[in-house]
Image 1 (cartoon, helix red, strand yellow):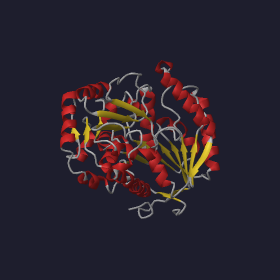
Image 2 (cartoon, rainbow, N blue to C red):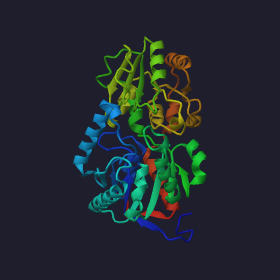
Image 3 (tube, rainbow, N blue to C red):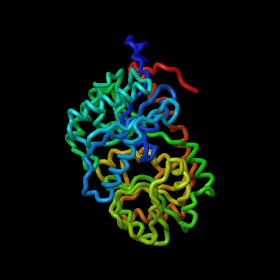
Image 4 (cartoon, one colour):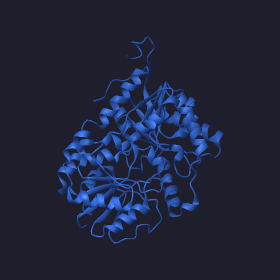
Length: 399
């Protein structure tokens, strides 16, 4: 039953302002908020506001501190950019998290309102994927509010947990819809939400299947690397990735080549082994090819609060590519029973990789499991969820 059928007035929005959790210009564009905005921009204009940050950068991060500052400055120079029809990306100037709060809120709200007007948005649905966006929600006069609860943001390394938890509490109470992509996390927190729904990650299914079925198109920098190849694609960060586990597993499998693709914030020399290759960040469009170039794909996660609540998008991408998968345990894997080998310590993890190499199995059950879970389908689910809460886009679907 939608709002009109229930007798409630329909609230119509003419665009979406999304406070993104990442920066469009330097993060992998496979993230939930970016993909959802890509789909929803087919219906209404979208203003994607690059991450306004949850923590103050620390000089103690060394070279990573300098890289973070430099890339943020490059992003700020872009201002407002239309990246495709109906999709705008904005880089507002804000002080680091928690600095000059009152002035910061006023300046951020003024910039976002100006960007929104230029994008043709006057009656916005405000979508918050970065919790500090909560500070300016009301200043934007939203028709409706969506809170994207895809992670336990307060458990992120370096944030002020009380500050971020305060935003989380406010948003759950204020939002017309809180979206969870982890069924475990929703089970833990939905009672604290005004209105909650589970819509998990999608997958650019066709692209990942095509790469898996045609591995001869593997990237040039991978071709010289001997097989077997054990692959990981994604951010290599201390709050998600378990370097001690990974290094010990690589040490136990000296005849395998471990190929890691993605940005790395770990200290220099953390994986100084002859069979480990760190290739760095690659564009999202290249990701399927790198996954397909592996014989086994791995997810060596930390066992912490952040991972407990996660549902990594790469799991569905791995399944669509069709390579055997080995992961450390986390609750959301229960929805993919029998499709992933699970191991928690170096010995069992190494054994699981050996087993996957010896008997990779049939990739088709995994592909069938994710075949209908495209980003287009997730966008439609989000629109239906909004409609059930009386929120409808004003403009017709664009071709």
